[in-house]
Image (cartoon, rainbow, N blue to C red; front, side, top):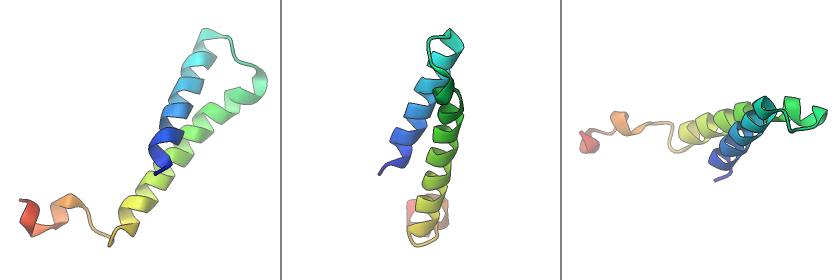
Length: 60
């Protein structure tokens, strides 16, 4: 699963950006990586049968 790694990578890049030790191209890639990570995670959650844990009566 690549989404959590993309999300963590984006958070790390944003953190480094706030510290001011990242070059210009990474300023955009940090938030983009977070967005891609979140989007992939949502797509994957939908793709697993299209249901969440709360939709399964057996998990209640």
